[in-house]
Image 1 (tube, helix red, strand yellow):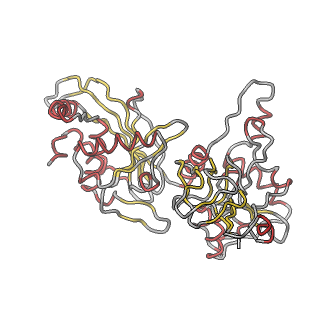
Image 2 (image 1 turned 45 degrees about the horizontal axis):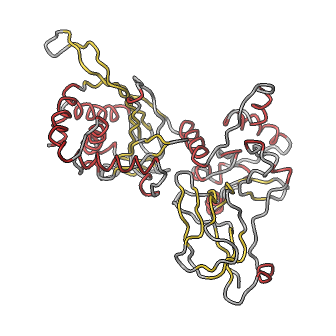
Length: 436
């Protein structure tokens, strides 16, 4: 009997992806382990291998299709002796498209394309309304006995995602007024996500502009950071750090490491300082886990890397246990593969704290958004020479770097966060301590 090939989940958090390229065509014979397609997730393009052997009888999802839900049939595999006629008799088929009335609620595809925008997975209720929700959100809702019609979605176009149902409870749902609900939903959605595509288009009617389509990464960044800023109670701690001792120490080390082809950056020291500080103040080495906190043992530090169209946060695991030269080499490797979108999911997931350094762009200071489930993120500015009062009370000049630590107040309180930031400052102003 024909076998459905389903859209794979290539990472623990993947709910949909883009079928970037087919590596086989209808009629090809494939064996287990053969490459079938390239799947683009929000972070990377990954190859998808066949599990079974057989003949590619029909391709159900075309190349370039976006928003393909995990576990959606994308092709049909035939066994020996079967033909295309067997496909029609089998249950394998492409997912149904949303009705035109519902599809009209989605944003029009950029660039004036006639192809319909892919609709999120939807459930149809007795009153005829369609509720758009991810497969994972629907499973969690079913397990918890939640009524999806009573839950406001925070995903693109109001789609219900995992975060919306995790914190909800059956008793929290209240019946919505029958007539007022649709009218009230539109302003609420606009307030939460901003004006719709049509509203913005009307505002700029007659003005020349080019529409830029959002790829999976940009959509995910928009959704996650909107969710993070709305749901995480941020507070901010700021410090100035004197870098003169570190710059001198770095120069000495780089001379000694020159023969090995190693050159340490200031960012390498910041990573090490953060990793050591998380061991010195272990209560801060934690993540928010819905209804509890996970306190981690190793120092796994995430570092933001800017790439074309977005960013990655590769994680340096056990950073407190590694030398500065080892951290430097690992960071260079992760950053290079991040820019080529070649990181595996386990290389950019996890960690308890992140570092975002815009100092190389001349930024003096800034406030970063916490990337859940992290407890915080350190925003690093550039080092500049400033007049300071020395230990002897005399006015002198020092190289000073401004940092801002954004903290999730659910995990870390103010005094505890201050202790962590003090530990980071101590490590950077006394860099030899990091080698002890």
